[in-house]
Length: 212
Ligand SMILES: Cc1cc2nc3c(=O)[nH]c(=O)nc-3n(C[C@H](O)[C@H](O)[C@H](O)COP(=O)(O)O)c2cc1C
Image (cartoon, rainbow, N blue to C red; front, side, top):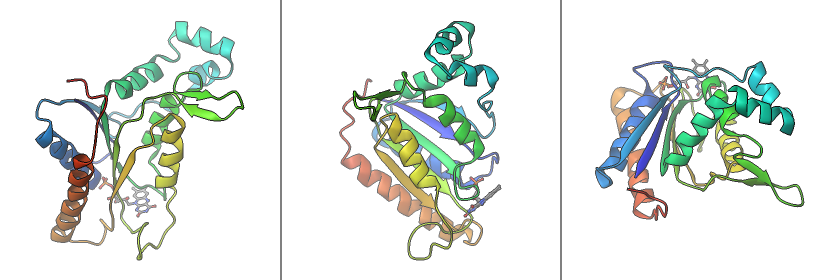
């Protein structure tokens, strides 16, 4: 089994990093021989879509040129990291109701028409990636889901739509909320509850494409 572990917080002492690391540790309990690939978008951000990449995506002809001049090399590398993984674990803060820009930059490289997104004869978008579980540990200073939500949530619908476009539909959101208000003990208890949900999800997981 292979795990792709992605972090998005710029902070080292970070709630979303602690959560994603705990999710990976939980997965390793059941799969001790699993390999873990790291992609630390928070500490080593990838560039936003630049002119060469944007040009390459502008037409089929430009894409052919982009494939040979290196303009889509990073995109290809990041897609291959996803393809090689049986499970993705993403740790991310909520920034201004949605994903931080480093995660958006990654999505801009992952979603590519003709590579990870196809279309049906009627023009409907079809994801070209094989589905696999994606755990998304979210740290938010406030509350965005549940009875006490007091702000909009553009993060979970956005991730659902964006990754779904590429065929990744088994998303498991694990929100660690109110990090700005909860003390250490209550945050630890909230994190433990989320990890219990990971255990429950894994017990029911079939993981048809594990390649050990
Ligand atoms: C630029 C920025 C925007 C933020 N926007 C939100 C927000 O919209 N909603 C929220 O609940 N918290 C927001 N926060 C707070 C973070 O989500 C919170 O501090 C979280 O714990 C950060 O994750 P980390 O601990 O993994 O770094 C924001 C923080 C920053 C720095």
